[in-house]
Image (cartoon, rainbow, N blue to C red):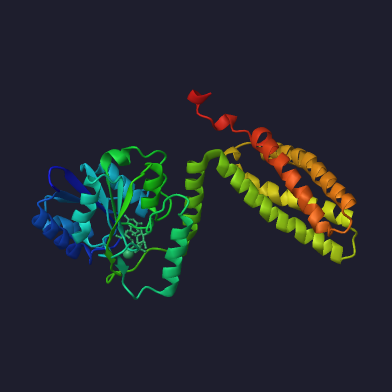
Length: 367
Ligand code: GDD
Ligand code: MN
């Protein structure tokens, strides 16, 4: 059942000369045992550690190595490889022997059974990882997985071991390979609905070292944000606006509280809270919530934002004062909260549709 179509295994590498011979031997055995029509495409970022020579020396017709000198990085290397691959089925796996090639037939069978995307998974029944993973990396991996929940219910969406059909890959729109999580990127952007996980034992690397750095983890947060915008469109702007607003609220309340402490009365304290949070919110909204309009004039947007905020602030202040007047027993912070809620609703609509208009980013055809 596993024969009759070509499989290309894309292997991104950077300094894996020690691991490559073992990996290729193990894949060779899988080829032999299953009769799979399988080739390997090693995407090497110019390691200069003998990897290229090694592959050449082995002279296996089903193994190719491409030396990449530009656009380096794990994810770009994988995408590059998948675009060049000749197979009808594309597999991605690490070179460091963390991913067992012996699981390949399992992954391919799941595709045959109708899956869009198959993960060699550590976290499903029967899957496991080597125990000497530090507690920190374990927590790290779990938190990263949790953050991916809005996009997929897969238990191990971070995995670098996965398979998909070429036709699925070609559906991918706006593939943007920042960071390490190319599998997650493909699940979301290729619109994979049937994601299936097959258990693997994830072996810790023996030779060489992991290239997963703190920088990669920060990039992951950026990656999640982009996936979020891709998937949720306008709602993502509202959500970011609300997150900024929530942070602004904390700033606002901190200022109000500090000024009350310093002996000011409620009204000027609330006014000052509004003023400080307007500045804070502008900077964050321009950078995040409405980042699509970042090419627009900074000054024009600031003026627009302040104008919108002034009306919003007037509404905010009016509502807060009205609440204070109606319920003198309430602490001024509660009155301020009511004001903030009313002001926020007005602000989002005004900013989204007037100050940070999308008109100039809409594709010409959609106009
Ligand atoms: N071409 C290329 N360029 N390959 C790279 C680069 C690069 O800049 N950086 C790493 N690689 C290759 C490595 O040589 C290895 O084959 C594979 O990508 C994974 O790199 P590791 O450094 O071993 O990553 P890891 O073990 O920390 O992370 C793996 O597990 C994670 C889940 O815990 C990867 O599979 C990740 O994708 C996965 O999220
Ligand atoms: Mn590894």
